[in-house]
Length: 94
Image (cartoon, rainbow, N blue to C red):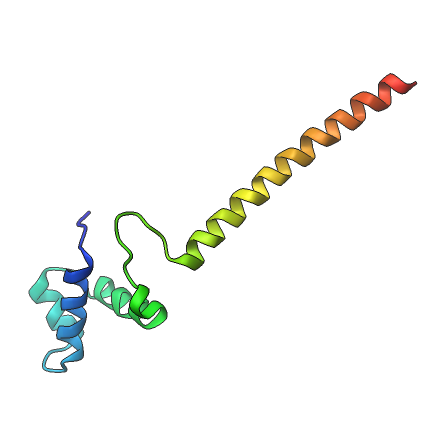
């Protein structure tokens, strides 16, 4: 899998936006798939200046979603432990 930096992606997007060549033509010249280039353009439209944070960093919304999912898993695990503890102590009360 090829990895492209932000500058390369922005250069490719700008070549399409100039309007002299189609997305498919630019993709072929740069030896990338048209769907990849289309995805980059779509991300630029969604995130604007915060597009392509790079180095494994996530967009703020994606990072927040990842953190919330982890918190949900942690809470589910804590609930399971508390349920087992409640059953254990209920048996010992009899």
